Image (cartoon, rainbow, N blue to C red; front, top):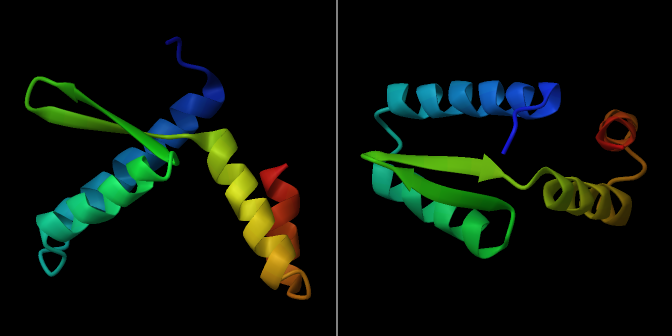
Length: 89
């Protein structure tokens, strides 16, 4: 799959999140793995193995739809979240 500016940006952000996760010893890797497995199960993330590395990719469109649903269903009266919803497209 070719990298687009958007996928590069998302990839960079996910890289930062992964780095933070490694730097947070209070979060057990099994806990992180459990949460990632739930996101994969929900179809919001995919995983693929590259040697010893497990690559995770966010399913942006599905995540965007979930964000829109959650914000419009429960939080549309909050101005900051309305801006977030607008930014999500």
